[in-house]
Image (cartoon, rainbow, N blue to C red):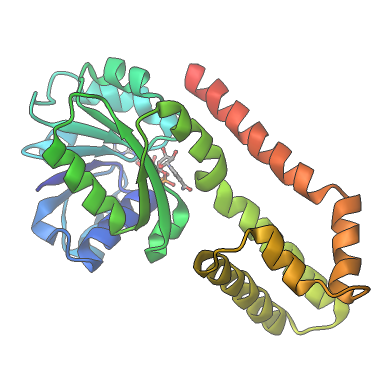
Length: 267
Ligand SMILES: NC(=O)c1ccc[n+]([C@@H]2O[C@H](COP(=O)([O-])OP(=O)(O)OC[C@H]3O[C@@H](n4cnc5c(N)ncnc54)[C@H](OP(=O)(O)O)[C@@H]3O)[C@@H](O)[C@H]2O)c1
């Protein structure tokens, strides 16, 4: 299985690292084109993969062509690729907000996979949500599943609208979580904890809470209730969060991300 990456940035590197670490692919099966010499040198040195300046060299013989540039480079990339994609090749896009219809038109190609990954893929804890056109073979779908599993968890959805929703929930999600983490650390420092101690306390608390929620059959609200003693400290904190409409703010933020994703996709 040959993967040809168009764009060798942060997300491409996370996918390459996942595939090599989990031995899903060997370095000989990965090719990357990127305009930046620094990026090419970095990827070649770190992973011992083939890197190119010309797009045709990177996608030549690739089974899957992975479009991993920023969404605003779609026009440039599609004009570079038009006419050189073979009928047996599959285009896989990770471009946020760019819909399958736009991709099939841009590349004049019907076999297209759309994936929405997230940045924890860099440490093998990613969440990727994906869908395909009906022109993608089951063997390529299986390969895609294996590749995405090397980055963490993956969920295939038949309806593309779920992918737009996932963009707002899981692709942008790490930013909301990091903001929450930052706020908890700053509060610890405000109270007088050394910053590194506050950071350790917060990160382990967030990680431990996720593990507990994953391993428990209880609803998150029940897990929250279990921490909250009558008349206690947690109850005092929760009242402030309720007064500041914390839950509504988070929900509205995710809805805003979804609306924005739809607006960007419609352009
Ligand atoms: N980061 C996330 O959280 C996240 C999550 C889900 C999906 N995504 C999607 O993943 C994609 C990549 O994100 P990223 O964070 O990896 O971006 P990035 O680090 O900026 O990587 C994009 C790379 O593509 C290169 N490039 C630009 N034009 C090119 C061309 N015509 N041919 C080949 N390479 C080209 C860029 O080079 P220059 O820098 O020199 O322009 C850059 O090295 C985006 O579309 C984003 O929507 C990202």
